[in-house]
Image (cartoon, rainbow, N blue to C red):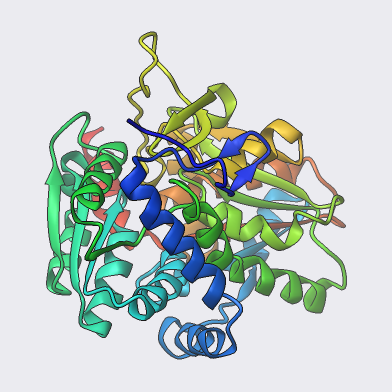
Length: 389
């Protein structure tokens, strides 16, 4: 029977918590204890920064999209270039932090879930570097549309398990990974990729991903001498968005805008419910189960959302809007042709909203778009979609 400890932290308003079986709660408590111990430890911080600099390639640029800005004729558009990180997305930031924690906790086996494959690739990468066994769960549908990332993970030494249950997508991969953890928690570290799951995962992921906004805030002040009008990021589980928002949450004049797929409008239409061991806004069907979802961007294909995003929505601190798959495809082509930067389909949702918003703002306004990943992984998928028309 799932339960929640009365001592459990990790709530953002009414959202969050840790709704897991008692044996697993013991594991969550230990993970929280170790995270709190090490996150401010000077030696841990030094090692984390070393790998971010020397392995990931941070800090990455805040690039002024001059051509795109001229085309839109309104606000200045800046791109926070997470696509330039080693392995091609923001996912590596959190993975470096968690693998260093896993090492200190004596883990030898690491499991992960992935949708678009970027978190799986990042996890396989660091497991190869640190000599740990790696198992990645991925929905069968996603293994087919992201076959290149499956090959990358296997090339790096990971075992990729295609999950056929349910829709064979990200939710089902999370289900399988949590099932593995329940069975093997004594010798396994679950390296969760998004800002979801039972406490302390959402807090941990935000902590390691907040390097995005830590850098962008400093960079925009250096370039423009003021804070942006808005920060825009795509939202699936919410890891890149919470990292992009983190250092602006206490700056009320900065608008925080999450862009989710119109086909999986969790924050627009979701209701409070428990999914995967935590409470968040969730798309629910008539039977009270998570609704099937679909997005052309596998990384956004999730019926829930991080608990802090749920709170930011309900409290009114952040705005959440939708972009259709077609709008994302158009933005994918637009950014490629105007700036020579091919975005991930996930990131293209944020670009799609940014170009619409920019037209309605003045030239004194500034938008920062978190370009959460590069589109190499999506080129074949887009090629097939274009040629099927």
